[in-house]
Length: 337
Image (cartoon, rainbow, N blue to C red; front, side, top):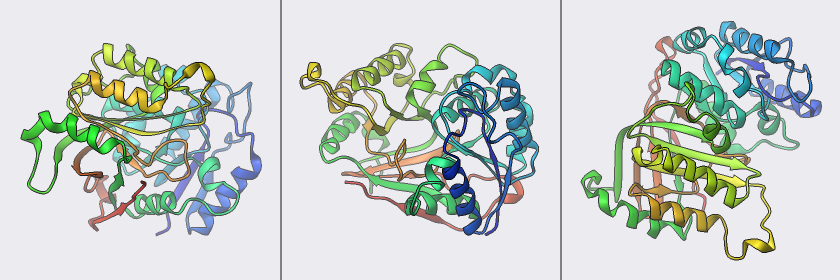
């Protein structure tokens, strides 16, 4: 199904022009019409143009009439311009059927939109790092993106890490009232939100941090050592954010190097510590983050979450966009073990 995809750069400058070209070519090969923002390849210091340039790009994306607005890349740059975004206009474009897709630094815009308007955006791929890779893009990422384009992506399944299933089950024992006959654990109508942990934490205490109670918070990060991840999680814990959710879902935490000083302190230590601090379940291994295999997740949508043994299933049904609503039921089942 041909879609009109608008490519823009709200964050870091595109340094890898070859990846940019490959990404655009790939989307065209998939049958889409690609419109490139006039300033998509601008560069100012580390940014894709100065602040005013990037703000204008976001507003052009919203006014483009496209089906999907895709960021070129993440990096850094959105948090510093959150005060200048016309959230009403962006939210209106989403109501009219535009799907905003991105991750990493894009988390800042997703949270700000959710906090100010309640609008739903998609945590998903970026142009250069996902569609612009050398060789073939990840088939699961591409299939999930295709589902979004066709209005069919309605859920995702994955496997918890082998060591994590028992922890997860211990932590859900206290939520027996939530179980259904088929599942060890079941949540319904919980708002899915989150994204990049560092970016999310940077929004705490600002008007751009969503006040969500009883939600499902998903988190990922890149290049952050386990102790830094723990430190950010403690901030969310002490701020009362984690305890107000019905579940915490951890995606992929990648590209960090342990040092001898760590001893036995590792990511699994952080997860075990987090579980010891919370009454709500902490699930792991969600296929999302700075990794090739990433599913698309509707940030701000109500979802159902079921767990049976090591198998987790998250379903959001159809996230409706007015005239863009489709009714085919179609979900991808991804097992990472």
